Image 1 (tube, helix red, strand yellow):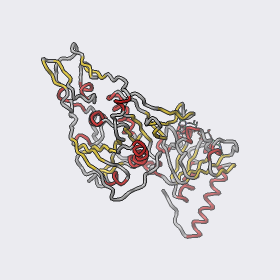
Image 2 (cartoon, helix red, strand yellow):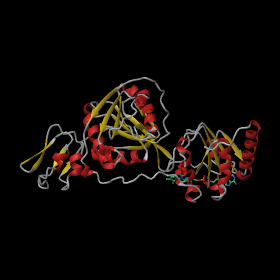
Image 3 (cartoon, helix red, strand yellow):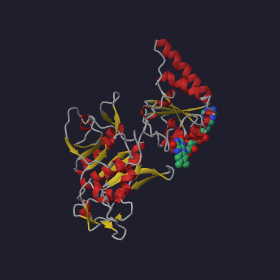
Image 4 (cartoon, protein in one colour):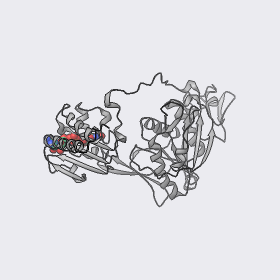
Length: 411
Ligand SMILES: Cc1cc2nc3c(=O)[nH]c(=O)nc-3n(C[C@H](O)[C@H](O)[C@H](O)COP(=O)(O)OP(=O)(O)OC[C@H]3O[C@@H](n4cnc5c(N)ncnc54)[C@H](O)[C@@H]3O)c2cc1C
C-alpha cells in the first residue's frame, strides 16, 4: 500500500511527474494515489519531503500465485566497434539455470534489456532459452547508472509481477539488485551458488554464509518476486538452439534526467600490462598462495603458465601481501572461476578459496604439507616443495613443447 503523509505533502507535483503509470494525481495541493498504482516506488524516491512510503503486507498464497514467470536482467557490453550491444556471458548462464526453474514451474522466461537505442543481439538470448525480450530504449539508459536503471527496472518488475527475478552478480548487478529490492520493499539473496524449486513451488536459494563455513538455504515465503543474484561462471551454460525465436516487446518509460545523480564523464580501460587478463574466463589457471613467499617468486608460476597457455591467479593471502593484484584473487571475496585445469601452488585450501574454484574440471595441488585441506578436493596432489616441483614441471613441459616444435603459449 502507498501511504501519503498529507501533512508533509506540499503538492509540488514531483511524484505526479515521475510516476511511470500516471497513478498519482495532485488534487487540492495534495498527492492522491490512484487504483493503478503498482508500488514501483518511483514517487517515493523523488519526494524531497519524505511524504510517501510503501507498506507491503505479507501476501496470501493466492496473491503470491498471481506472480508468474522467471525474469532476467540482461546486462550488456558494447560490441568492439560500439555499433551494437551484446548480453554478457553471465546472462546466458542465468538463462541456463532459469530454464530448469521455468520448466519445473511451467512458466516463461522473459529478459529485460535496457539500451540507448542501439541494436541488441536478442537472437543469442532466444537461442539460449529466453521466451521473450522486454526492451526499454532511452538515451539516458547508456551507460549504466544506478538511478536510471533502478527506476526503470523497478517499474517493469512492479508492473509485470514476475515470480522470480535473477541478476548477474557483476559490479553493476551487485549495485542494482539491492537498490531494486529496497525500492520495491523485497528481499534479495546475493551470490547464490544453487537455485532450485521445491515441492511448494518456492525458489530455494543456496549460498555460502558465515565466511563460507556453511551453505545457507534461503526462501522467500511472503513476498514476490523472489530476487537473487548469481556470480559469473557459477552456473553452466544452457544448450544452444540456433534459430529459436521469441517475442520482443518494446516499452518506453523515460527516467527523468534530473533524478540521475551520477554522470559517467569518461571510461578509462585497464591497459596495464597483463592486468587486463580476465581470470574468470580462463581455461587454465596456475595460482599461488602464501607458500610463494614473495612477489618475485610468482615469475615461476608465470613461466609455467606460459608453457600451458594459463593465467596466473592467487589466494587472498598472496593478494593481501601485495604480490598479486586483487583482480587475480580466486575465492569468496575474489573471482569465481570455472577452468578446465587449476594448479594450486602453496595454497592450503581454505573454504573461502575453494568456493571460488569448486567447479574446476581438474585441480592439481602442490603443497609440502600432506595434511593440507586442498588435497581433499584436488584431483591430483603433489606433496613436496613447490620451488623444486614447479621449475621441474616447467622444464619438462618446455622440453616436450620444443620436441614437437610448438611455440610458447601465453594466455
Ligand atoms: C570473509 C573471508 C573471505 C575470504 N575470501 C577469500 C578469498 O576470496 N580467496 C582466498 O584465497 N582466501 C580468502 N579468505 C582467506 C582464507 O580464509 C585463507 O586465509 C586464505 O585462502 C589462505 O591463503 P593461502 O592458502 O595462500 O595461505 P595459507 O593458508 O597460509 O597456506 C599456505 C600453504 O602453503 C604451503 N607451503 C608453504 N611453503 C611451501 C612450499 N615451499 N612448497 C609447497 N607448499 C608450501 C603450506 O603448507 C600451506 O598449506 C577469506 C577469509 C575470510 C574470513
